[in-house]
Length: 358
Ligand code: GDD
Image 1: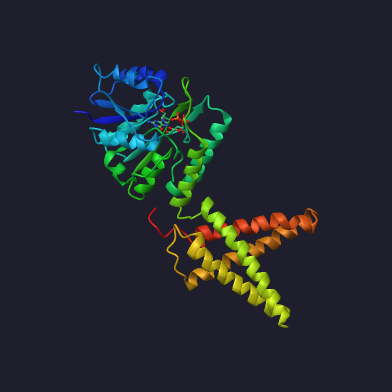
Image 2: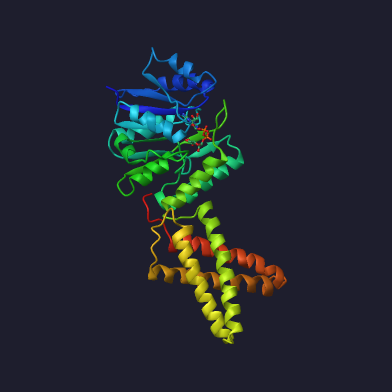
């Protein structure tokens, strides 16, 4: 009987497959036995043939997906096909040393942990031969995920877990964040540990990580944090803000023309604009993520964020003008940007957080 399954997503990894399987075969796992499942996504470099050549002599399997290539979807396909209840996920490019596999899988096999992460960012862990920009991206990616899932290396692609835990991962999950999805889908129910690994950048082939994968990762973190910040909501929020400013100016002019005092005109025009902005933001700007009902307590939050943004604007202006001696006509621009950012983020995370299924 197979005690654990190693799932290896692979895309154009012909130059790495023989060496990976040679090193995996050299490991002494007795009394445990394992299978290796490669999940290929339409490689054009002959990688599937390399895997097929191993199928007769060892417990190696190949899944060839025909869907759009995707790391998470490929990994989930491998997990679904696995014969055992303990899964290890690792890259095909040898950046995850096979020799460190026993330290990762054994604590799950013996039932001490539900998830074991091969971590670059705990004592003893390291990265080698990685360009500085990749090190910084990887560190930043792990650091921003930390408040959500409380591990040091949430973007690691080398980890072991009990297979049943993958059932909670959405079939729509995509990209380079399967470990994060696994941890978040089972939050509060897991015994997780990280063991140090030495990640060594590939010697053959090229990384498939793209800018869109990185954007998708950040977007997913925002959603998992309950926020509704997206390019779409930001664009609509900006349009509503401009419309609100127009309403503010029109009402103010109208009241002044009717001989209302300055204070009253200022107060009423501000209030009308605030109600307009709140209504449009609730019903339109954040509509995909938010139920869209108008609520008094939410309007209160909207005003609170607006007041904080106004205070910040005053603070930034004072700093730039009085401390750094920047002319007020220039200083107003960074002050406006800071106010808009606080207003938007306050709305996306505090006033209109996600009310729909994550
Ligand atoms: N089937 C399939 N489909 N495999 C893929 C796809 C895909 O669309 N995209 C990438 N892979 C495979 C690669 O062939 C490789 O085996 C593994 O996934 C990692 O992809 P890379 O593109 O080489 O990742 P990296 O070297 O930049 O590494 C970073 O991301 C990895 C994702 O797991 C690092 O942070 C790694 O630690 C992390 O494992």
